[in-house]
Length: 186
Image (cartoon, rainbow, N blue to C red; front, side, top):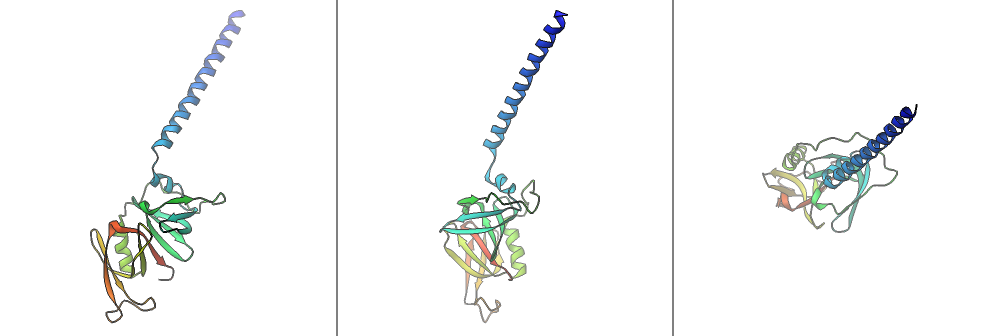
């Protein structure tokens, strides 16, 4: 009878040690996971949620996080759609009440920035291109997307980019782009 209580006591001590060791391992794994997470991974977890982005030049944009690639993020804002390079983001604020409207994507889209811009070129989307400091680089409709640059035809906002309405062409290196604003309805 004494043996039974001794073994029960030893087994409960061993079980408590194993549970404590397991909790310590889980906590350590969580610390490692959090320490190795990058910005793109954190943003993927925000897919479908409303966020406030602080961009260079004291620009703030509020919108829903949409698809993202390796080095860019799409945001559906109230007045426009934004294509933001990750390097242009200064701060991200997530309202406590923000709920996801879509399931997060486990991996970034394989679509590279030049490919996405070619899609906008096909749509003849008017856009405003800002640099990494918030300065407006160009405004108009893209006419060419190269490997590391794009060409924007400047024209009056209420006109189509016809030869007679184009006032100039701007060549913008892709590396200079901070974000692109595409007005809704364009």
